[in-house]
Image (tube, rainbow, N blue to C red; front, side):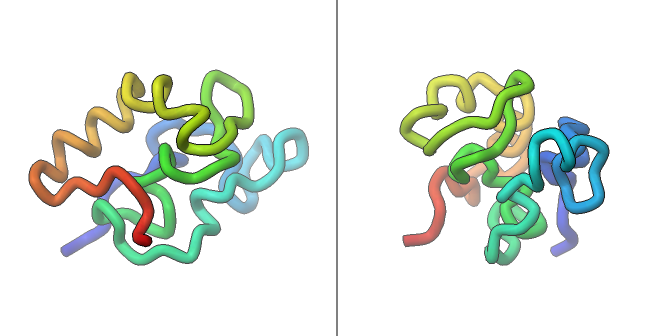
Length: 94
């Protein structure tokens, strides 16, 4: 199955390697995560809510437990959940 749109492509945060905001905010851990095709994305691009240090509302966020309430209302999270249906993964593999 082909990969689908990843968070940095949709949210245009500029924190992917070589992105416009890397100097200011650092490289996001989602595009660097050593994960394979979770929710049909690249690295952590379609499970960013479960990765500490991703960006939301212009601020670097903490752990999943700290940011979960915001993430479950995010348009990207909701789109991934809808697209993946019964195959949706909420958390990182154990």
